[in-house]
Figure 1 (cartoon, rainbow, N blue to C red):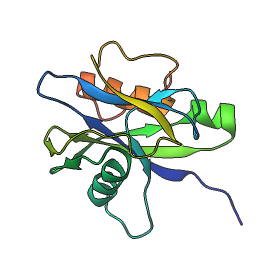
Figure 2: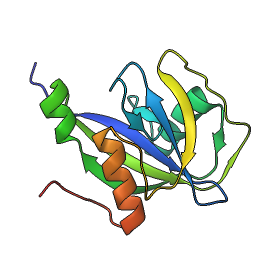
Figure 3: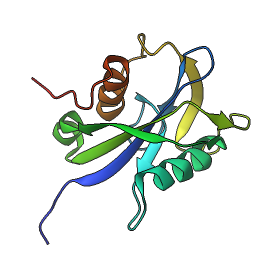
Figure 4: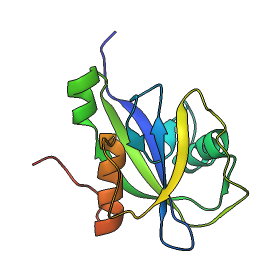
Length: 142
């Protein structure tokens, strides 16, 4: 079977102070910080996937997430041999209390200034945050 890139989802969740949510990963992309997200399931819309992933990881109910960017995650491909294209969504409305739902996959959730993302940072997340800050749909590697 021919290998092809897989589709990932990343969600920029913004709170009322303009901070974004990031977590420190344990399993996949170990020890890197990242916005929440995961894999797109077969037959799933980007929005439904974002809502599902955020609920699974944080217990938050995001409202009306919208696609803001696409990333081509070549750093991860070079480091791990996994090639993903990620769809980045913005969620600036949500309900519920933030919880660490998957402690085996994530150490902690942090609200941070999007202009000061912690390192090391997962490339899909870093590119997605750059797109969010620049109001740009795509930030490629030059």
